[in-house]
Length: 425
Ligand code: S3P
Image (cartoon, rainbow, N blue to C red; front, side, top):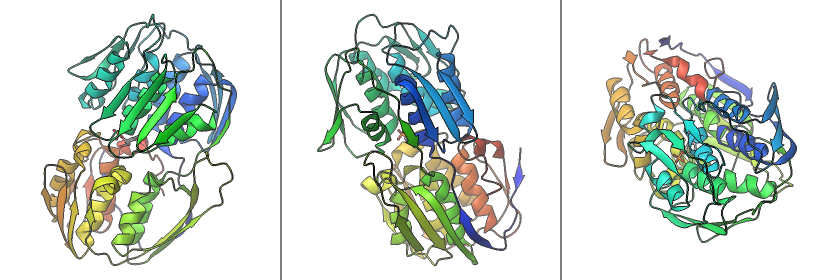
């Protein structure tokens, strides 16, 4: 379905973002493996989370959802049931990767097909490590569909070093590591989002991090008890509202209770570097393992070009499309590098951004691992393609808001993957 982008006269007021997607997935998965009833508040309701919910229900976990509250009756580390049918993970990379880790240690076989887009996303590096741990896991050309044979021996703990950043691969290995016969150790080249580690600690599982090495001891048949989890607002969803406000000539918004985990706040650092009018007000935190959160105020701003590389790129990985859009309106050159992983998301985001924003008049050059953007340019409307990628679709809607003439974005229904209320927000 195509969407004709309306022009907006003013952006003003207070807004609470939906629950964080990454944290909602992990809260559901770990609660399912705990013993007893966990209550997850402000859990995201969106397509990807639906995939995790239904997959867990298929594995015998009872989950009741009432509005934004999910109550999960955990079955314990050994309690999942054979679903006796394929597990539909839809379009969700996080569901596919995390479940692949967990089901590698399971005493029954499973098949995770994934939709057409997911079947093009790499699984090879994760599968190789899971095999090293003793899992009998197979893929087609290193991608989904994934089939996993029943595991008859405990997994072996491993020491691994991933040559590229991926929080999903790391989390999948931590879930497999819970069933390992010793200490699983994962070395990250660049720190990625640490929500799994934090939640494991909240559940009382000893996991530690020293000099980029994460260590987790296998539970050897033990269990961990249920907990209450408060999911903060999704900074990745909030970044769309912040971008709308920054680009609009009459905007001032206050975004409430948004997640401020420093492994995710790269976008805030980048817009500050660009000269944005932004203020962050962190909330007092009592439990060190609950996720940090706070309010963020943003208003209309004049921006300048910046350099985004290394860990900063990874801390803003899902927000890079927005950084690129902002850069088209900033004075001077913006250079984004170390972002090659964006080529393996729901679309090749580097290629698609250069092509679609380029078609709207932006000056964007693709490099091997990033983009070079010259600004500012006046964008012109037209028909643009989102390649059924939710973050690209939402970025193009914001581009359409500030362009001359009418913009139509195709396949707008993909926004339901992460931010169903986006068009009404
Ligand atoms: C996510 C990790 C990132 C991110 C994705 C969500 C997660 O992917 O881009 O949207 O929840 O762990 P990678 O692990 O592939 O870097």
